[in-house]
Image (cartoon, rainbow, N blue to C red; front, side, top):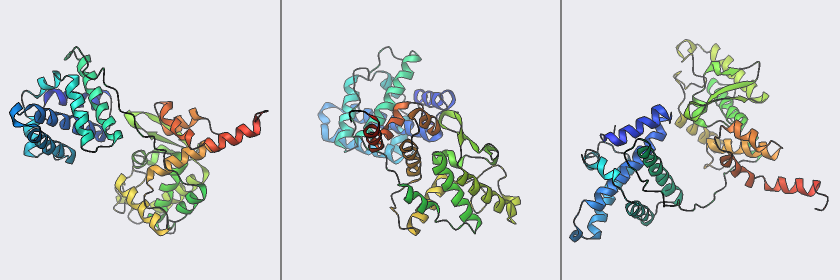
Length: 339
């Protein structure tokens, strides 16, 4: 806990009422801790102290927040400040603007600044709903324009090359093949992948139950190739002499029989990228991007892809339309009478 009642109340609201993941709540917590540190640095010195001294103090506090060291003396002092709750409630738009200027001067990317600003918007919206403030201090502040970066994706032949790399003659290799096949076949997030249980797989219907963000569930179709890989993996797993000690619920387990972690999935992917000589910056999320791009390129409608990806907003899915522009132009040229 942050030891600050107001922030703790907000984080509990995110976790227990909005059902945010622990990771997301932790990011909100770090952003708020950084803002608190800035407020202390910006207001905790006299005018005569000078800007450089104030900025130096704020920098050290902000670095502590970014490093995530919740036990540091400096961070503890800020969060234990009995007046911090009131400081947060009395924040003016000028202080928020000064915080944004500070982040910009520290060379934070526009996307990171936008995320921190979104945290503050959410926090103060919560404060207004609870009646702690009457005016939203960010009401007149615009989110900075961000550079548009298109998702990276793999071509079909690259996908085939990567997915055929694991050695399916061993249990772990068979598991990795099934894992990569499911990632590409369904477009699941890696956190959703490692959260899958054996009972979530319906072999007769060729579907899996996915638990997404905010405890939302969705049913996703699974391709025949991925289903064959899953079936082979589970058969080898059941035949393994150590299987009695494996976690009976988890679909993908490590060599000790425990549920695989997201970090382990990334390490396995890195291993196969090296083996087949592909770009080492490819991540599990690249397979999700590839899934969406290939679906749209082959005629799937945007709404269907939105549901398959588990996106709450269609605008989130629309980023992939930029990647499919050549297909749309070809369809236009082939179909429009005056093209």
